[in-house]
Length: 270
Image 1 (spheres, rainbow, N blue to C red):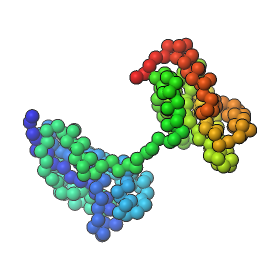
Image 2 (cartoon, rainbow, N blue to C red):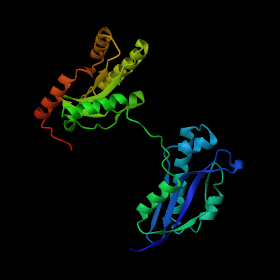
Image 3 (spheres, rainbow, N blue to C red):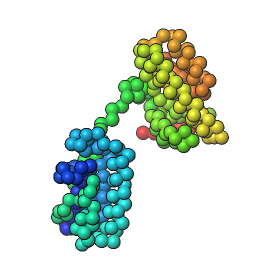
Image 4 (spheres, rainbow, N blue to C red):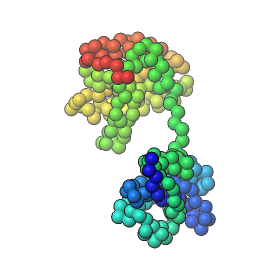
């Protein structure tokens, strides 16, 4: 397999440049023979905050986006990096470029990924699946309906400056968006969570009033709450056009998913 001479540089960040301590937050790679040029930044900032303390994510994300645009503009023409040193010298502030280093490349995209992972890393914190969603997933799998459900796209509600993600969806006259809801033992905390879901569901219902209809359907873990609390939440959800099922009594939901799969001609998505 052919090898090509590439050049890479690290994009480094320091909010106090006089400290002369920089953290790698991005990488650029150019391979003039191919030609190939790419630049990538870490999504997270845990490494930055370990060294410099809490940082404004919007500010850092803005710096990354601006710097990326300048890099693309500069090196879309300067493919061999001849103007690199001059460009780097003009950018020695919060974000700077390390000196160019040589690297042999066989598959540019693959080698770029390996370099990025080794020298920068994504730095995103590990996001654990909420326990209620795990229980919901396990219940669907256990009752054999998981393959009749879809993963809906993010629901954008621009009039509320809000986006909502749910793990499951299926067609039932309107499109049902299924999510889990854990109710804390403390009644006030439970009211806050239930109220939040009722508002989200009401917003979704109103946003899609002109169709195609979408409806939030919530499976709640009421194991730490009284039946009276459950019925109060059910009444609130009915008024907000939100469906409600109990985690310990999901039989009606399984039956509806199976019925609608037959009615709407759905089949396994696996």
